[in-house]
Image (cartoon, rainbow, N blue to C red; front, side):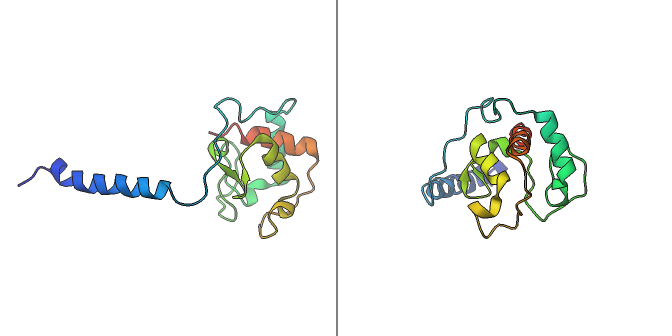
Length: 135
């Protein structure tokens, strides 16, 4: 009788082959910014961004690391925002694109459920700076 490890090897090989095949499908993902650069928005205040997230009630729709609120599943959780390839599922994840998304999500994707909150550019930059600290 083969050992438990020997029985798993064929399944592991099939899984790796499937992953390799899937990696070649679909759109090519943009490269992520190097660690430490993704969250850099010159002049942005991450502490203020964290407070603004609470003030604007973002936790009514999103769960956000470091911000207390109800468990919500209306919008996606924003944990790990710095490591995501896309913002809103449509824009490459760069600090500038995250700011643009926060300023007017429906202008970028008319099908989004996220409303235009009327953020100022300064508020959007600070919120983006905080979100981009979440790894």
